[in-house]
Length: 345
Image 1 (spheres, rainbow, N blue to C red):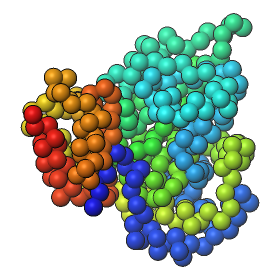
Image 2 (tube, helix red, strand yellow):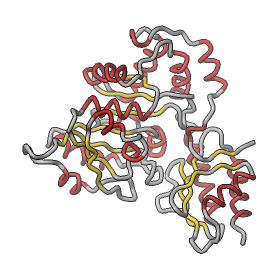
Image 3 (cartoon, one colour):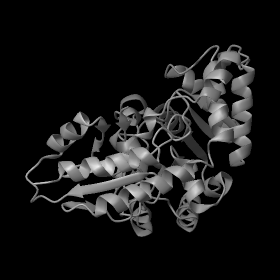
Image 4 (cartoon, rainbow, N blue to C red):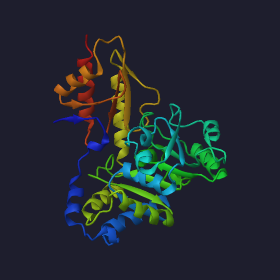
């Protein structure tokens, strides 16, 4: 059996999800008549203490819709230089929205220095683009799956409020942050005008994300979802899987975090492997291979693949290993043993 640690996007729907999908009551969601979608959206909005929610095909689309809803063409958005929205979403904000990303350095803990955010906000001047919004990410993928402190988001929100800026959270793995902090989704997202979170990563749904915000925001976002090709019809068969994930699989994310810690501890004992700082906080292990090791990451990946272990490369000498529902304790031990074998001279 293949052990796939490339991402938590590789999770398969659980048996309970497949049953719920088969039995889902459906309707036309463009007409807002799919009862399963409506139930999921109402539940998600209530969970985050927002007025409304919108079911979308992907997190990338959810983030894009939020940006297009908050911003006009030529507006500027402040975000980290390691933000998923900047690095991995095909430049959609610029290509489709004409929105300019103003990137600032992400610190190792996923934050952006408050003084850098303050300095990046444009004065009102005919020569400048208008600063319209600030985007944060929690948990932060490229910074090691780290959790943003609530106090930090409060401080960023004060800056946003002072300058009448919108706040969006890319919360693709929001519930990993919830489990790690033992807080609530509502508490972690209270400062944001809009929030997107994913159903198809740690929560195992085959597809889908949720976008939350005010009722007026979601009304506008629903129209933009249609514009970018995200209007769906009898999509309750997918929403049913998201419902199962959101209502039954959040607490078990703690198992992913525990296994990531065991994996990191085991790998750290292997000569030539160094676990990156802040890793793992949640379900991601970022590691580097000592440059003195005479094997490239590609060579190591290929050798691991021969043992039916798939890993994601992260930089010239690095790897990202992501635990998820389909990775059990035995898979962790097999992975440690495989790395130990591969790293031998």
